[in-house]
Image (cartoon, rainbow, N blue to C red; front, side, top):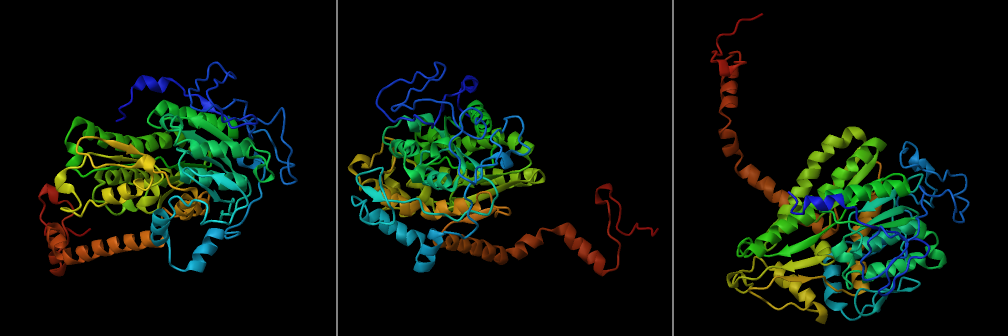
Amino acid sequence: MSTFDPAADAAVEASITVADEIEVAGDKTPTSDPDLDLDLEFDFDLLEPTGPGDRQQEQPQQSQDDQGQSPDVRAGDHRNASASLPRANVHGRGSGNAYANEDSTNGRKSSQTRRVSHVSSAQGSGNDSDHRGEHERKGSEGGSSRFAITTASFPPHNSPRAWLLTQAISPLAIRLIRLLLAHGDYVVACLPPHEIENEDRATEFKTLVNECKSNRKDREGWKDRIRGIRCDGRSMGQCSAAIAEAVHVFGRIDILLCCKFESVVGTVEELSTTPATQNLVRDQFETIYFSQVNFIKAALPQLRGQHTGQIIILTSIGGHIGTPGMPTHTAATWALEGFCDSLAYEIAPFNIKVTIVQPNKEIQSLTNKIILAPQLPWYDSELNPAPSVRDILSNVLNTNPDTVVEPSETEILHRYPKLPAATLDKLVQETVHALTAIGGHENPPARHIVGFEGALAVKEKLKTVTEELEDFVEASLAVDIFESELKAEARQGKAPDTNPERGESSTDFTPM
């Protein structure tokens, strides 16, 4: 169960509104609402949001497609809420699919080959590898990348969708939000307090906020379609408050994207040495499993009442393949996926769909916090090559002076990787494309593996499982004694004993 104090659930965390006067500034204290506690490193000037649920007083200038749409979607009446959302410029499936075009041009030279080369070679050269865009955007670390909102592949739909992201501050989430806003969708961005208060971690989100408040033509209307909510998923009360706020502002939730993640690196033995390392195991489950389950439980009544919706779980291929050196990460991922496998059957009658999206492990690890447990000498890569993930992640962290890690047998290290913006763009683009293509799809897959290497690795794992099953199938069938007796009796022409627990003989059969 959650290790948080239940009393914390009674407090509703303040919401951060991305509205007309959103401002990223210094140490100013917001005064819009004395009841809101916004003790942040940067300040959002709070105004009432302008969304489908709040459009009675002043309506922004609408395009021709927006006219004729009902602006008033009440929080208590969601039967026709999707029809009431202002219409967006909706692209059918496959239209403007720049990511797919790039992949088809390059053939099967895909994810890991490109990603590893980007991570190793693009450090310190964040502005020399991607010139597709029309403007500069500051990256999370030295340099900028030329980046434009690439038109993604969205499934056909007649009205904008309302997305809720359980963690909206990661590089992947920020790039997804840009595409959703450019497409005309609505976004509720949940911001974990411990991350939004981290100046380095919040840098890219500040940039997104500035884009939303800008007067640029290609960002027109963005500030009206995004709502930021300060929310810690480990608190069930805060999750419920976030869902209620999303429904109040935008009238409904169409897609719940569970994307909170962090990686604890350490072998089973390394995570058992001290109370502090043992707590890392609990914290990993709190982050990956319990926090996302809390959001799902909070959203289910709303989705069931709408009789429509989709829950997307962003995990990794760690849900199929264990990773030496990251056992708690694998265990928490499997727990969440197992939970959702069962959930999918339970909520299918309510027309709620569940999809698990599995990118390669480095996608999540290199865009979220990495926690390194103290290393034991007998798990050094020179002696035991199995848990090599520590060396791989450490090598990436060591490319930036701010995130260098030194081997330690006593200290727990916490790091957010700092990669150039151009590297991050390419690292996450396949996963972002998968999310836009699947989100809101009429018939989405139960599981979707992102990238050629990930699909190949999972196929190899399934092949191994199948081969082992065939090798030991006789041993499996040999223990099926009752079934064997039935087959023998059937060959002898005897009727089966329909109730063996009562001790009745199979020959005591009287025809009707």
